[in-house]
Length: 63
Image 1 (cartoon, rainbow, N blue to C red):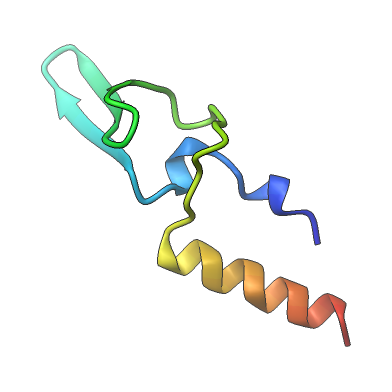
Image 2: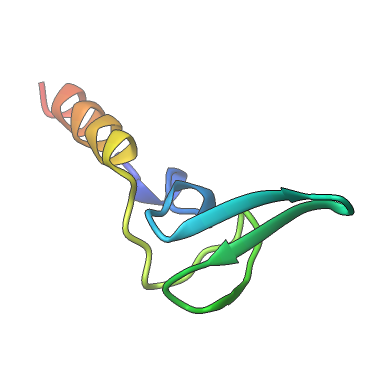
């Protein structure tokens, strides 16, 4: 199981998306600046449902 398959800003607990009049705005609350859903940073902390999916796939792999 490769965690890199899940590692992206959009799956991080600090990722915030907001719809504006000019389109979508993506922001990292931890880093304090604009980002994109597919960017990757070393400070990544997966959302709860993503961590559960990672754990499930790791269990399946180890069977």
